[in-house]
Length: 128
Image (cartoon, rainbow, N blue to C red; front, side, top):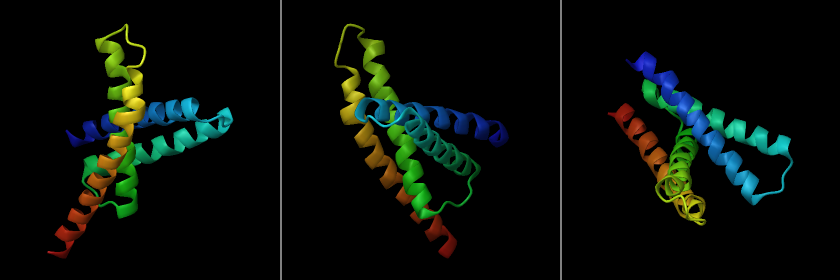
């Protein structure tokens, strides 16, 4: 079951974070297309790799766990907050702003804290 789950979860996290980062960069910066695409792919690759390690139960470095957790939960919260209001109420103009200004920062913070707790619990279980 884990062998089937690893590529599915990793691909979903890759695509979610790719959408999250590319949308944020498109809305908030005037950076060149190649730069925002390269940065989005790098962040999405990191999130996909961390999801792969997370599902397989491998140990994760603290920094990788914090960044990966922040990207994964930030991306999930952003997608839900950005697309959710549009799916529920199609006539709202400012619905996607919830994902941009509230859900994504909250997801980044919660994901970073969760990644840190995950890595510290792994280190604590190794010390036992």
